[in-house]
Image: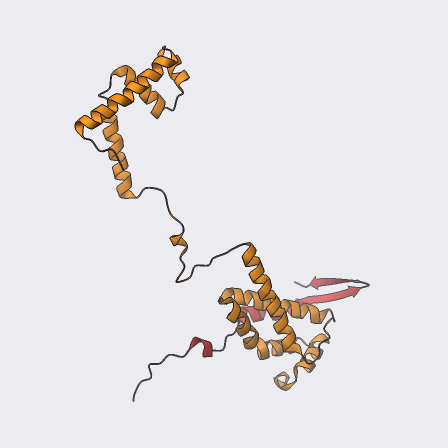
Length: 194
Length: 47
């Protein structure tokens, strides 16, 4: 590894003239400084790796297209590229906020599952069973309207057509059905909540 | 022999990128060639 003692400027020149091993030496020589700089700003290994990679892709492209003209200042030049990419990263992150799961921050603190848990499901089933029993206590015409409206989701016009009564009568039966249900619930002191 | 229980600080370790990242860069460099024609430049990546 004679490359390790050559100055950066010579390695850059060798790389431009086609010596691929010169790039390996340059990376080997400066990787911890550049990566450490990026990591100090980003604090994320994977993202730092991405930015390190993008930095050197720019370096490679610039050197290969012969547009590099800062001989002797290789490291400050690469550091400036890395710095610009870090700034770009924060600009992007500001436009599109993105949170990674860390020890202090858990996505599940902000995400909730609104579906019922097992206890909730059992209570809900119990309430529905109780309600079905209460419905049986209602007069047939009132029960019919309530079931059509609440369980079959029919409109009062459809209910009126199906039962052969006017819309007002259907509305009245619905009203009495609800009043009677309330009365039965109060009388028997039933609690229907979940 | 007394044992040393103090841990090395994270900051004192030399941070290095993953080996795969370096390998990718070296392979990318080998595969890439840039040709300038007039004012335009063409990037060719050999598979």
